[in-house]
Image 1: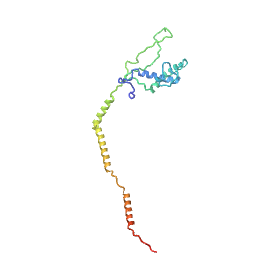
Image 2: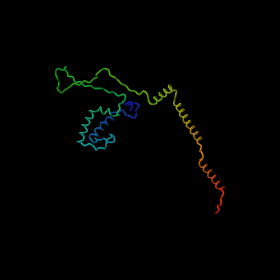
Image 3: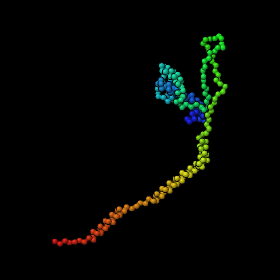
Image 4: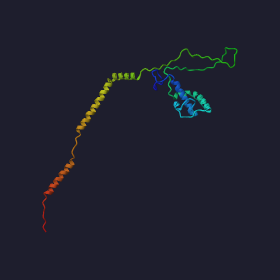
Length: 211
């Protein structure tokens, strides 16, 4: 939904009045943060604001004034928000023209006016956005393209992983076989030298010195 920027009919968790409720919460959130009070029958948790006290009759004037200012800047709120319309919603662009009526020679009442509401043209431009592929269809199509171009599939990927694991296991076994503990030859040579010295001292003749 965040990618296509609209609500499709398959989004069952989102209600039809999602856009209206989301925009109302955004407007009230901005109003409450400015006036620092909560209107009646509203909770801070539902609006996502601080736990302000309830608005008194004096603070309600701030609420009404801020709502009018916020509705003027409604385009900025829509641009910064994540309130998505339905993918099949209808939006009408309105234009207002003031034309003086010269057909009536006599004016019935100076305070009266005539309003004519109609379509500007007999034709209209219609944009339609549809979901062509779901995630499983996209995965199946990509798998078919990879299989056609590269000659591979998920089974071939599993075979490559199995081959790499088998190769790693064989290399670990070969390393374990080649690692042989070599004896310490230095101690052996030292002991041999000590034995030779002991033998030499044992056969050394004793001389008697005469005065």
